[in-house]
Image (tube, rainbow, N blue to C red; front, side, top):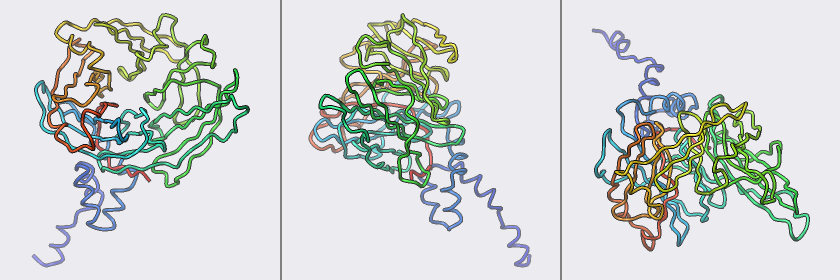
Length: 385
């Protein structure tokens, strides 16, 4: 065989190479970026990260990857771990992987994992990609409106969302200036990976005072809010369209336990749900028609075999899996450390011990580590800048 024919047979179209690369793990892709300039430009391209994310999404029978976030009460460091749970796992797990530790400010905000990225409030907002072990601190923000009087107060709330239309992650930064009975809103948006390290101002929208919570479902960020600083005002659900960058209010049923910090917002079958856990009962209000503000009330009694997770002093609701399981986790880092994966449809829970968390070296003591969140996670190669 002559050299020309041999070369022709060995040629692989770049489109096929790209398709093969989308099926590799992030660790391998990070190494392969150094193969050539063309491979590097392919791997960092937004369309490649979108295709890779689609292939990375867990299918039937795939292990569940959890990302666990802790905060050190002494020095405010955030520590992030990941752990894989094989199918039908009900016993102890192998040692978790330490992703990274981020210094910062002791603020409780941490987002759910959205298409592979999570967001923290470290004083400055911070977006993290656990797969690449990279994080990006966003520019500081402050209220632009000066206090109207010595009695005026500034308040800040944040949320993290993903727009499936533009394939963009966005951070919402809200400052509320309260003066007597008046609320003045300032909203800014940061688009992750857009190549512009700046916040931009958007329309202020209706006045509200938000709870310190948020959940993003199908391109909509939801959180509860008061429509006035007056304590007697009603609680409404605020929906922020991540694509259009517009706000609207959704009425909450009168019988819903909506003003309690014990109630949480979750995604249930791709719909918003308010869940309140008391004793051995989960009361849920599911938003089934957003336009007409129709909610469906459900009540689930947790079986006696799962009664351990009803201990509110020990366990807290910490997140959800993509399949809709509720994750209950220890409130602080203990040995052994347990999580429950509670299946609402089957009304059963799996108790899983995660070994090795306390074996990592922490400044001061692991006893100072409080659980912030536990969420299911999917790998992404997406760049943060």
